[in-house]
Length: 428
Picture 1 (cartoon, one colour):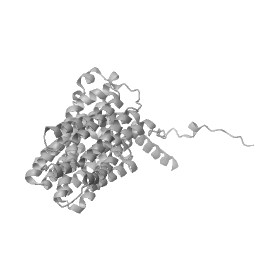
Picture 2: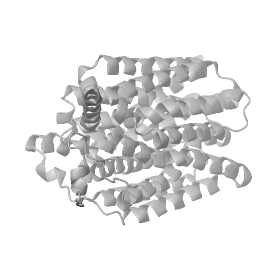
Picture 3: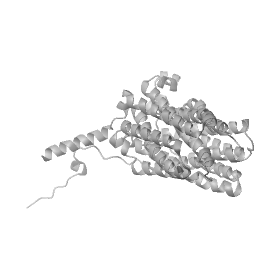
Picture 4: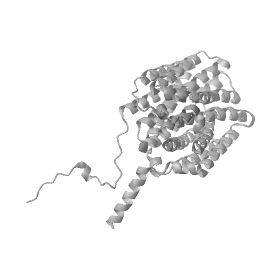
């Protein structure tokens, strides 16, 4: 007579195997993504700013580069302050304040009829908004999500804004053609205001990182962290890639219009669609195959597509947008998860701030400097120089032992592979 033996669930799990991943897409994470996406609609509307400047204000390449780059300069200048605020204040308050700043700036653009100090001040306000919102979103994601799923979560966080990279220009460009740019800016203002209201409802984890940080770090902030080689190299790579990103997003519009295109919104749709597909369907790739390896491959693709834009034809705009989205969609979560996972818990907020500041430094320097190059030597030369800078970032990433060590395969994946190897050995 056989006896029935009850086997507990925990007894059925092979202790040699890694523990199953915990659920990470919680209601709080979803709300953060919704806030980021709503703010992202307002922000992404201004990706069409070069077209507005060229068509409505008769701006040239150097003027376009300067105006567009002002946002990056303001973000860099404010990032240190933003990091301090976010460390001391609830993240939701910082996000709400940043979204409110975007709403005010968008309203201000309804009164812009000429180049001058007013438009620069509005771009500064948008830079402050970017520093507060993007840094807050990044920190909240790192606090709410297990580190084993960090690349995937950061990728999804970026995808929530990338959706708006496609949607906002697709809505704004025909709206501007039909009823004018004032309606576009009003729509952006309402979206940002909605984001500010939603941000106040976010529930934050009880992780007082500022309280446990060493005194030297609290006093020195980002500067102390940047003395470390990994943080310093991370900042340089992001600044160079940010310069390339800024050059592409700024100058592909006037270049395509000069080549005979009537509308340029298709670039953003193709870019966002490819980046979203990569982050949603293949967000696990950096964690599974190694963040350093994946980031390096994506950066090389980055350089290749930018170089190809130097010989772009009008009908190829969407193709370049899709390939660029593929490269950026992989690079962003891989490089950020690499740096964040290597940082101590009390340093992660500042690592995210380094991302915001360094990438924004590139967003300022790329359009500003390369705008002068475009005015004197043409757009193709601009794209060649941007590609060279990206290759420099790839070389630094490849040669850095600190970045290579930080971007190795995650402990969970390594444990899983070791367990799989043992199982195959036992089967023999």
